[in-house]
Image 1 (cartoon, rainbow, N blue to C red):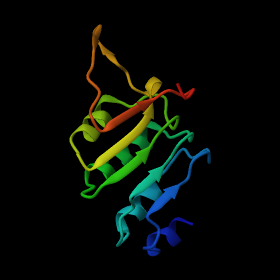
Image 2 (image 1 turned 90 degrees about the horizontal axis):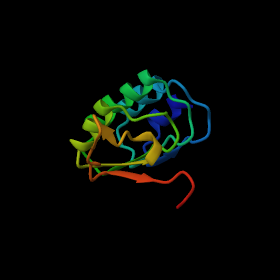
Image 3 (image 1 turned 60 degrees about the vertical axis):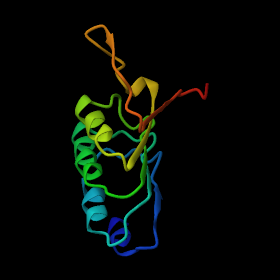
Length: 124
């Protein structure tokens, strides 16, 4: 499936939510090889490992076109390094649950990057 994605330049939006994915390193490798970039990638409700989130961070750090990434429920927390990567790339819009973002550091509220859109798991 990933190999077909690499050669199909008409795919602009990819939703692979709710698949129990843990390792997306092969997917990211093929996305890097595509001639036409994705505009949207939804990884909602998967079980990504910390290593996969690191690979994803490295991928999105190089994106130079408008790109939306849906991460609601795909991992327990968005690590500070990932959030920093997101905040440094104005081409990205990342969607996640409030619970995935640690809002406090040493008792002080951390600012939420403008391009990190947090939402409630329960729709309110």
